[in-house]
Length: 177
Image (cartoon, rainbow, N blue to C red; front, side, top):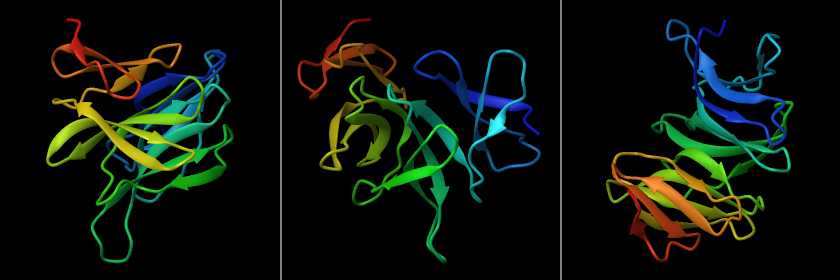
């Protein structure tokens, strides 16, 4: 059963909560959704190694990060887009050389996804443009603090211990707190 939950995210119309859940006594963690009327959560994923940190797009797609492995290779992360009933739509290609992303955030127009990622042993804000499947590192995010889009999709706010604001293309970075 689910007795621990983290990384909650509202559905676009506020009907559902998406979260990573499970039990530390019975891993792995999976993606769940639930209504706020007291009905029990429904499990959306059943991955062998587990998942974490999902996000809902404005057009009702879900993206989450799952752990995976190929043969004897070490465990790696991959981002997966699915529908709201848990049907897998697309496994997104990882950033080369490896994708270590977490805490996805859809752009308001659904065309890009932000991730906290690791590049050159530093936490960075990475943007994946879905049309080109290109990853762009937008800036350092020391301390693994997730980023979030402004409602108009023009700016990104993220934390490093300080609160930073930048344009959606990574330009004009400035500390706001």
